[in-house]
Amino acid sequence: LNRLRRDLPQQIQGPVIQPRIPREFAARSLFKIGIYGKNYSLSRLRKIAEREIVPRIKAISGIESVELHGGVDQEIKIQTLMTRLRKHDIDIRDIQRQLAQYFYTKQSLSMTKRSGEITLSLSENPDKIEDIRNIIVQNNDDKKIYLKDVANVFMGYQKLTSERRYQGKSYVQIELHKEPNYSHLEMSKRVRA
Image (cartoon, rainbow, N blue to C red; front, side, top):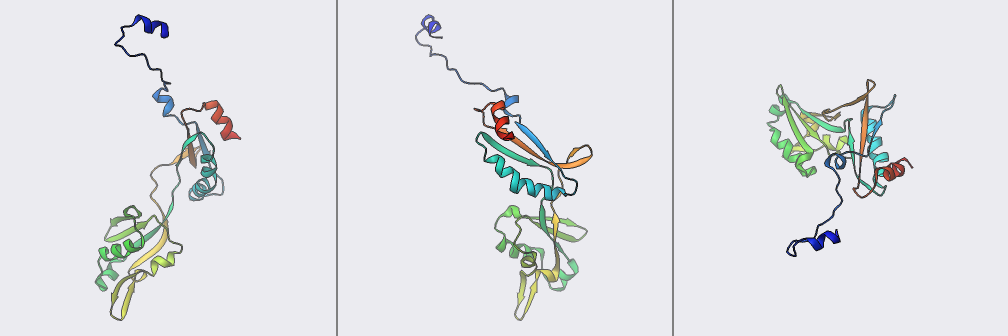
């Protein structure tokens, strides 16, 4: 390149050489690992992957990101009982306001309405479901109305949005992406070790 530089006009800047990774390679994952078990639910498999496998993989130098696909997380479901809400003159917004005092993020509370009943879903799980049941939603002088008086509170699952299957069995998938400056071969050896 230096020889060519002498033949170019002086006002032209020298060439800049940068490594180029084609888009289709940069976006590709290094590995996709499937996890399934005969006696394990998808929820349990996802928890095992989140708590035990993913942290170990993230600790490997050269891993840029780890994505987890499949399975569903548990969440607290609050199914309001419309007849009881009317009896105590409680509005769904009263319940939402009280829950907002305990769960600070907007994303932690979602609401779906079906046939007059309203289901609230909490993604931030408290230590005990009983803590949610005992939230006071209305305090009238000497009578306190608790959430359990106007709603069923139970553990449920988030809505299943996608599912991975292999030979007819559902599984959880871990997808690994490497940092650009590491080779695929070097990273595959690190992950396998």
